[in-house]
Image 1: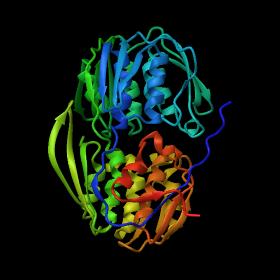
Image 2 (image 1 turned 90 degrees about the vertical axis):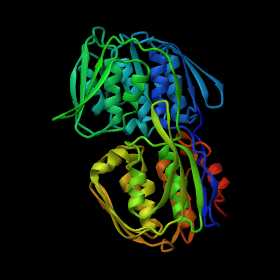
Image 3 (image 1 turned 135 degrees about the vertical axis):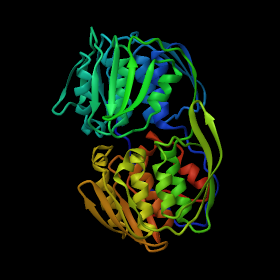
Image 4 (image 1 turned 30 degrees about the vertical axis):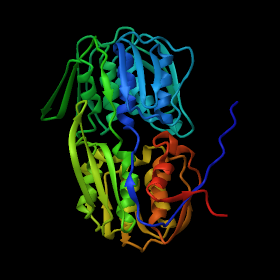
Length: 449
C-alpha cells in the first residue's frame, strides 16, 4: 500500500507590488474534454497546451486503460490515438480519478453506451461527491450502475449493450452532467436531446463540432436544447488549449489587492460562459483591460492587463453562478478587502465540491478577521477595505485546491501572514502556482518557524 503523502504547509505574507506576466496553465475543462473526445475519434488528435496537472493526468490514464493511445510528445503537447465511438475497450483495472470530479463524470458518460464493464473510484474527497445526478439520467440509455448509498464512488458500470437515444432535461445547472449525457449519446442510435434551463459552460458542444459531431443547439421555451446524432463518426483534429481563467483568477485577484501592482495574463480563455468573475470584479471597480482579442480553435482568447484597485462591494446575481462557480472562493477573499457588504447567493453547488466550500470559506474568512455570514446557499461578507483584514491564521483546506490558493492570496494583502495546512492538492489544477506567484514578486514559502 502506498504511504500517504506528507502535508506541505505554505505561508503567504505582504511584499512589494506585483509586476510581470503570469503565464497560467491550460484550461482544465478543455483539457479533460480534449482527451476524451480524442479517444472517441478515429485517428490521431494533437493537443497543444494541455494542462499537465494531476486531475488531467488521471483522465489521460483512464483513456489509456480504455484502449486509446495517449502519449506526451513534449511539455504541453500530447497525441491521442483514438479508437472511435463504440470502440472503447473493457479496462483491465479500476479507473482511479483521484480528486477529479470532472474526469469521473465525463468518462462515466462515455462508458455508459459502450458494452463494457468498468469500476471507477477516486480519493477520499471524490468518494464523498454526488454521482446520482449523472448516474440517474445515464441509466436511461440502458446502462446499469452500482455504487455505495447515494451512488457514491466506487461505482461499477455495466455499459448498455443496446443503447437507445433519449430526451432529458438536466435538473441541476451542471456542465459535467450535461457533458456526460452528450458523450453517452454519441454511441446511441438516433438523435438524443438534452435540455438545460440555465446555460452552463459550453466547451463540450464547441469541441464536439470541431470533431465533426452532428450537433444542433436551439433556444426553446424550456431552455437551451442540444440535439446530437448518435452512432457518430468523429474525426481527429488539433486542439489548442487556451489558458485557464479559473487559475488566472488567483494572480488577478492578488494584483487587484496588493497596492501598486500591475500584471499581464496572456492568452486567457474568454468564453462568455466563463467570464462571470471578470464581470463581477469590474462591477466592484477593478481596473482590468482586455487587449489583443483573437480566436483560437473556436474559443475567444485575449490578454488581460490588471492593476491594483480600490474595490467596492456588490450583490452578485445568483444566475451568474454557472459562469464563475469555481471562482467564488477567491471572490470571497476579494470581497473581504472591498468596502461594504457583498452578497453572494445561489451557491448551493459549492457544498458539493472537493469540500463544502461555503462552510470552508466562511470559517477561513472568520479566522483571518473578516466578518462573514454563512447562508444555506451563499455568503454575506462585510468588507474591511484595502488594509483592514488582519490575517494571522492557519487555514484548514480540507484537500481543496481552490481554498488553498484563495487563502494564500489573502496572505499577500493581509496585515499578518496567512498560512494553509497543506498545499499538495494545488497541483490537481495549477502545478507551479507558487512559482508563478513568486515570479510576480509574491512572498509565498514554507511557514516561518
